[in-house]
Image (cartoon, rainbow, N blue to C red; front, side, top):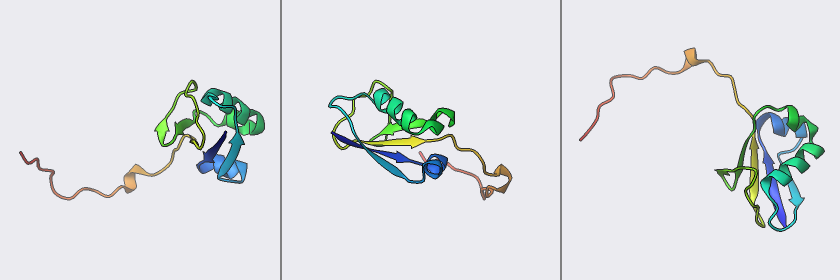
Length: 96
């Protein structure tokens, strides 16, 4: 069966592409695919804690994959300047 792995942010930049397509065994677990990915893309081991989603829902390594699943690998994100956030005008009110 075929699954697609989408790479985001620095992972996309390091891989030089935003998606990979893999043929996996039926009922393959996410953890098995992740081990294969780390073998093919060694920089994943050094990327820190990566968020993983299957079909837009966070998933665990024991998640069984199905034909056509889309797996997203999202690296830790940092940055921004809290001092540059716009200030809210006025006060929030609650309606009952």
